[in-house]
Every structure is written in C-alpha cells, then in structure tokens.
Length: 89
Image (cartoon, rainbow, N blue to C red; front, side, top):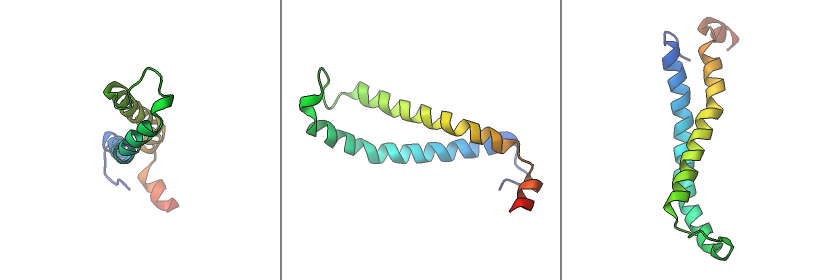
C-alpha cells in the first residue's frame, strides 16, 4: 500500500480519503437539505430554512466527525509493517 512512505504520509493519505468522501456527501446532501427544509418549513420553529449558520455548523460537524472517525484506523495503519501487510495479501 505505502511501501517506503513515512508514517505521516500514510496518516495523511487515509485522512485525505476520508475527507474526500465527507465533502462528496456534503455536496450531495446540501441540495437535499435545502429541499427538505423547505418541505418541513412548518416544523422548523425559530429557524429559517436557509439559515446559513445552521448549514455551516452541520457541514463543519460532519467534517469533524469524519476526521475523528478515521483517525483511529489511520493511526493503526501507520503502525503496520509493510512487509507483514504484503505477506498477508
């Protein structure tokens, strides 16, 4: 997977892939959030459907959770000996 790569490179590679998936989910989910908020307008008490602060916090929260969720497997991947991983494959 990363023969010759430094630990930081492997860590960043895994975190970057996780962030790519998160950004793709956000880009697909934002239009759906706008449509859903307009449909549920009567249930949103004290909140406008186009509230930019709520959307920004939701996007940032998604990215933070994605990084936190991928940090443990990424750190575990930095500890794997490449020779052992190749023998397993």
